[in-house]
Length: 373
Image (tube, rainbow, N blue to C red):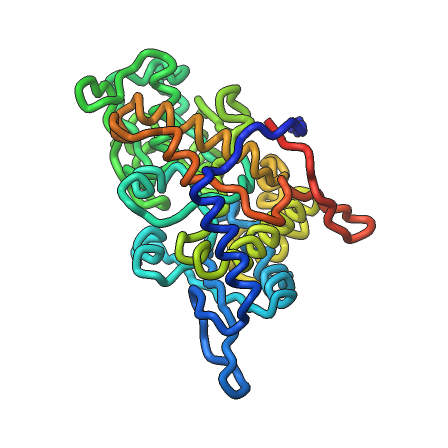
């Protein structure tokens, strides 16, 4: 996949930037201030700040988080500022990521950003800080289906992992482009939620006409049942340069521990750059640590197909483009100020580069200063 570097044009909101800058001053003045996730450590009257980071198993494209955990990047980077990492597993069927954030059990993490857009509008206290990778969502029909493209989806049933999932948000944006109604007043498709493991079965049995799924579930279903792909966000012209999965930090962390917020963002950017350069090693680490099942060749090939070069600038442009179009689709409220929504929902942290490239031969991470687009 061609991966180009471009100039940055987006900036975070002045108010939030002032909050972060002020918090940085406060943080630098006193190592004893309480922060998100602060826990007692050894030593009289001492504390060590802890950043709690979410992760999921079974998700191939969560490789950057897995790598940052298992190669010690989070711990290494946080140790430089006297802090440490803790990990919170988001389990399917348990509390959702939004619920864990809302209850204060997660301070930072990574996931499908479009899944959280409505929640952010409704008060979920997070801001995104960097795009991590593109692609990973695919849409299939049965081999004998008369559906040839997204243009043929009017009146069809579409199976998805969840009604707020990014697979829904992306497809609604694409449907708008081809003139198919997705609003409450003019809804010409039906989305049906299934567990990820049941999506392929639902399509094969004819319960739905189309499915949207994330890898490795998507490609496994394609190979097992001979499904035909009609849309791939990793190659489609509309989505090929958009980040599906992005890094976030909570507002509590930004206020009480901005140094930690910047540090975990850099660590995840580095881990993403590692996956881009070393997809086979990344897949091996996932499999050997029981984070993702599957065959090494199969998994590493899928990782290699994705663009894991991180970018704050292109991540923000992705966020803005999706927010604008999802407002038209009725996902975001008509009265929402999109400019303000973007400024508070996507921020630039001091000391965080646009991204990194990993030099495998030298074992070094190189900062990217030129924005992508």
